[in-house]
Image (cartoon, rainbow, N blue to C red; front, side, top):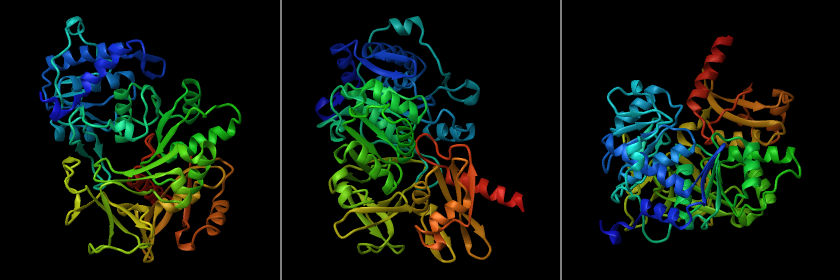
Length: 493
């Protein structure tokens, strides 16, 4: 292996961290906590088991485990045999998982029963290596050609696998340092590890010596308790988490100390202006950072808290690659006009991703993941919505994210999802599904919205639900919400 070309392998970095401070905490999840040395031993034994079961360098290994110490041990074990971790939701419907496993041609599927994939080698959750695996010496150092392969349904609406172009090795500045991480930070991992951001940042943290404080499932009150008790210094969240945490923080005045937080990143969904301002007021503008990018990492924008205060609502300027706004014919749009966001790497940069099972939308050298937005005169980007989510009602465009951000600012509202329902007269009507306290009424909400936005954007109907509308990652299956709303509407007639 040519270290100069590949960089320092992840597995060597982790082994060296375990040698340097074997008793330092590595991962805490629920009631289970392991040191660096314990995690290293566990991953090494698993790696021997995976290799014995036929996993080879360059293979993809599907990991269908919930957030847990077991997940991280499995991921490191996959790196140790030179293979690529391919995480999926442990609650993914079997048909979807089968399609992904087939696409990945997985050499091993971890966290599932053998009957689910009769043509694959499978290991159930809780699998324990044999005594021989545990007693075996460290494996020869191997490097995976792609360090991760998460799935995404973003721009196509159907699951696809996105192979990282980078091997499981570090060259130059560690990516975590770019994100403001410091050695031995305590990092809260609040999102599900089958999503790219929690997977990526927790991996960076491991490689920098962080103590990962992992939530099995996001819970806002527990997140605040963990920040307080573990003195968390770095975390990545999504706006849904921010809203729920803020709500709990305000309901328990004086209970939680958040002063240890040095860096808070938010991403993955548009953040309402009121919510971001509230967190800036709580932690200070220098603590709050925002990233806009896709799993594909074609390009991205970053904005600091102080910048945001001068450009309220923006997601920042390009920090990686170039960005432009194009109309439906592929022509550049001037500042202030909404169009599709296209990005491309800087000249000379390697291709940042490889799809399995999909093609990305291209206009010349520009590529799009399907989002809409506009630029101001200073080149700052503002998000509108995903093209596939846009509602056209009576010939007017309505962006669900805009309406949701206003609904979510109403006292008593926990979350909302806005969808377009078919209508013979208008083509589509705006419909809101709202999770709220019992004292919030449709009339109150409509009166509030009429004071905030133009009438055609105000939902024609509001449904109230008790259950959460989004996954722990902050993502929502909007098509499913729409289908269920149509079914309820049809059944009510």
